Image (cartoon, rainbow, N blue to C red; front, side):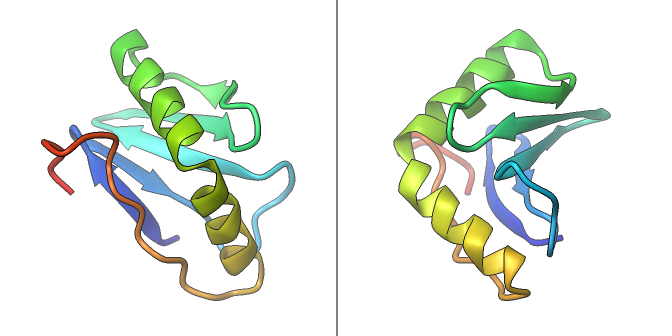
Length: 91
C-alpha cells in the first residue's frame, strides 16, 4: 500500500489492485477515511471535519495526478508522490 502523500499529519495511501471506484485512504492517528477521487466525496470511515475538508481540497487540486496514481496501482506499479495542498506542508 504505497503512501502517495503526507501533509498536516495525514497519510494518503492507495492499495495495489484495489476495487472501484477510484479512491484514496486517508489516515490520521487512529482515524481512517476513504474518499472518491472523482468527486472528493467521503465514501467510508471517519476523519475530523477540518482534516476532511483539507483532504477534499487536496483531491480537487490534484485530481489528474490522483487518477494517474490510481491507474498505476491498479497495474501493480508504484505511483508518483503528490505534494501537499500548500507550501507549508510537511511532505
